[in-house]
Length: 448
Ligand SMILES: Cc1ncc(COP(=O)(O)O)c(C=O)c1O
Image (cartoon, rainbow, N blue to C red; front, side, top):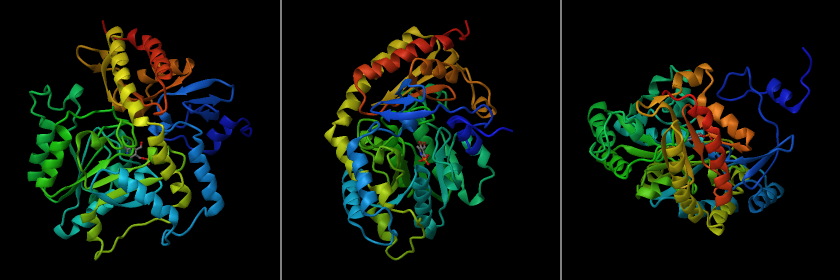
């Protein structure tokens, strides 16, 4: 076989494409990214309509973040996490100020997955004296790629890791997914059964250490819970002495118009995990924050966790500038304002396109779910299609958007609209206009 020649050929030959069959992988060659745009090797410019992997909240080439990284590289690119540094002290103090009240001590890692692994391990260590180890999660969720995080992932990416270790003891609770309610009920007459059912589970399951939730479900459909849901989940977990872990890897850092999604409902988790937007994705940083009560437990109990790259100076360098940039650029106001505009525009699209089943979101975090039959809510594709390589309708529509210079992420039956929070109204409209045009492909395939 001849040696790979082009950049794309070499990438495909020598590296794995993630969460996919390797056959047919032909990743676009990107050479530049600035603001809300990226450019390919042919000079074609694309609007980054999903902030890469819903992580580039501050857009590309933010100079304050770049400078902090360069300065840190000059000063001290690495030091053993067993030492104190000014960076670690200053960044942690600034971080605790923006975390939901009550979260007072943090552990640093280098990804969202690791942040959740730490959260789950901490929850289990703290719960060990009472023999509790199980974790409740939900089917419509993603919590990461490694053992514990993938075991409590609800989406089909978990299937490939099974059988997961028995000690994981993961149990799945119903989703707060009103468009496809697992109880086939309607809000508010439902009495928020999806939350109430947790009480039934906890009374019967036994040995539950924690429940992990994405406060606004990300990849799996931007599910914004009804207003009673999270406060009720908090109440029930508290009543049963079960820890609540908020996975804010994607929903944090202004995505919903507040520092963290739980802030929208005033809910205080015992543990919060986050990553992505904490550095605008300029460096890989994961954060696991806990209450003082949890922190106190480890005064006289061994904190059995750590990494060589814990509190890595290069990872942490852009944390303070990122916090400052979110404030200086008034990005949460922009997010809230454009969120109202997005709602209006996407609902207009829904009126025009028979293929749109549901539109939902908050801030700059939106999903457009497409269906083959609006009346029966029959989807174009299923979870099985996703993992068996069946071409998906969302990807066909996504490809049409790509031709128009807009990159929008898709997942089974929906599009994830989550642009960098620095986007302006005109840029946002151009992305929605591209979707408007591209959806004609799906409209043609709806059942009469
Ligand atoms: C809610 C949530 N949790 C955890 C993760 C895993 O984060 P990472 O890919 O950085 O490991 C993701 C990634 O998309 C996520 O969206």
